[in-house]
Length: 120
Image (cartoon, rainbow, N blue to C red; front, side, top):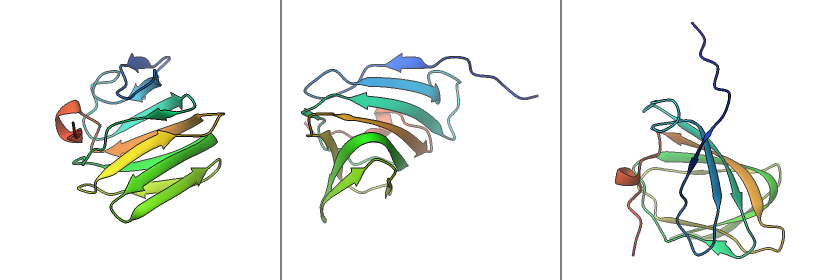
């Protein structure tokens, strides 16, 4: 039987400024371990610590621009664009522009604080 999810759970975000994470599907909101789907709203100047997750992350930018920094360099992901960061890659996300960013993040398997491996 289909399962309707009417609202997300708001998850505490890491970083230097408040960021909104609305998890629709994942370990918290739907007890799903295979995949997580969340809408993110990051303010201007937000940045999070570098991480080296044990999951693939597919990010679709809805508004603004998301800066993605890896060992290979920096990629600016603009509205309507998608970036894939593969499991095991070191990555740091930020929103340096005045408008911040709104984006959808899909993680396979689902995001977990135990498998994101944030750097101090």
